Amino acid sequence: MIVTSAPWADRPVEVGLVGAGPWARAMHARMLAAGPETRLAAVWARRAEAARETAAPHGA
Image 1 (cartoon, rainbow, N blue to C red):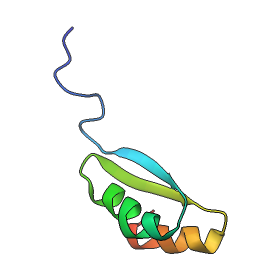
Image 2 (cartoon, rainbow, N blue to C red; image 1 turned 120 degrees about the vertical axis):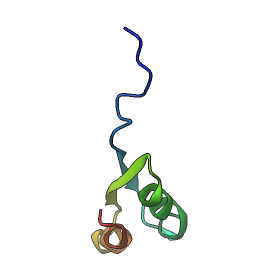
Image 3 (tube, helix red, strand yellow; image 1 turned 90 degrees about the vertical axis):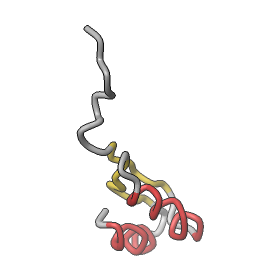
């Protein structure tokens, strides 16, 4: 059997982000949430409030 597309091609890969610092907020979270191949599913950080603030704008 030949597979012509990736098994996840019909839905984005759910990705978790570790860290909620300046780069995570400015770049990584935004890019993971916006990409058609990925969905930002969760954010973890040492400070729970920082994780919530990074995740909330992206629906994670």
